[in-house]
Image (tube, rainbow, N blue to C red; front, top):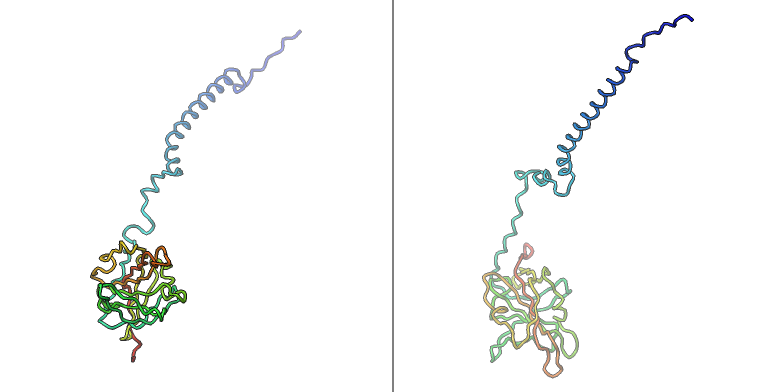
Length: 240
């Protein structure tokens, strides 16, 4: 038989080439994997910091507008100028739908403030020996909570809350507007005279009526006191 001539294989099909290619690819994969792992380790903390609740960049970022463009905090309104003396004519409490005529009151023989006439339960009394509404100091107004005929002018006084308004209309046409600061009930046996009636360096108002437990024989055991201070004044209409 004639001897068959073998054709030489192309170099890219030789075993040596395939082995070399395998080694090169393997080394490339290993080196590439190490590089990606290193990249993940260096970028992961930054990514978690950006997305996590304790975002360091967010905490260091100034608020929108920057400190230089923030508006200045609003100044509280200046207190109104106290009004000159003028007797009160009407007391109004819009929240209670109350508008009552005012009568002057004096102290009795025991230096206690008298009450408005019982036969007219819709009147309130102003202590005319003290400051007038709108003037510097503590103006005091009292009224009945109820009488034998039913609820009286200050029946709803205990329903007031801080922020409500009380208006004292005066003979000169001006109105002193007070804002309620607190509403408290005191036992008559431990009534804090100085806290309620004490002198103040600004215009304030006290509204007082009966409160606390009621006994048919002795009446109410305490008093409800509304504390308020002057926050506005209104003038009469021009030409009045």
